[in-house]
Length: 474
Image (cartoon, rainbow, N blue to C red; front, side):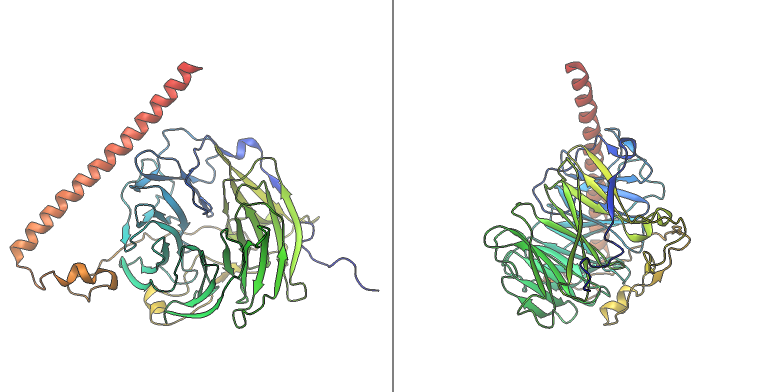
């Protein structure tokens, strides 16, 4: 007899939203029109991009700080334009990168117990894009390697430890880049673009390894992510505006391994992938559901598992890394769903009768230790993530502070994107001139700092006045 139902330990995964008092309330989630997830989570903090007057800001809340968030709660507010994307460093739970409409990428160090004052000074500002920066993504295995992609159709890979742009891929995309995803060991990246192409790129050789034209024929945005086995999973739209998902082998991208039509909703499908269980969670922007699928080696390769449905549509979504989950409750995923005014955790669980550690649900997972230093990766080395066991739960260790040692630009060769600026600079300025320049620079930096502080205090004042006005109106 042939089995009618495919056996899978994830067939009965069910999602459950937490109670109201465990949500993060009264948050003005950003209204900027950009298809990023607006939320980033790690085992210590949840970060949410919010509405901010006079620039861009995001909240960073310790996970336990649930309930109503006060309007005057400190923010990270150093950008001069709206923040479009944020990403926690996988090797340091107190370091977060942000990309903004002000064309810069900033890297921030969050105090161990969260913010007590608004943070206006990043550890480093990475400048190299000529248009807004919509994507930031840390390297999965090399320390201090950060990728950014902007609306100038360029991808820049930075060594955050020195503040330098070491790789600039500015001639590979002819149109806007929708998303970028690192492979499991960080040797390749895959991108989805407005020109309907999915590209697999070797960033260090600066060459396109594989590409597929019209991966999805529809005009609406696509997404492409790497899976642990090296295949690429994409979401997009058909010519008839039906949402599609597809699985590709980069060695032969002529035809997809699998292609499935979903529905006719128009929200972009954001895929979240768990390499340990081979489950992909699909969260549509503006949808009120999360679908989950299992990827296997047997036909039809992409197996629908179930859907978590709720009443409210989602504005964005954060996805907790595996080491932040509660293994005693058989929790295999936790999402942080953004509503218009709140953030609601959703817990995905595999029902089991036993309270013991379920080692089939929790194979060793990527830990917080970097497998390579930035310099080793840029020299051509590759390494898989260093795995840890979750048998006794994950205990966060002490994070070392991010230190940026800037190289003297005048001593080094000019970076590709700064050739024009530096070619006219004198090789060895006289001592007095350099001292004067440094003094001027200090003066300007102090002025910028005081302006930022003024903006932050005015922002707080405006929110207090808004509160008073609301009380008077009530």
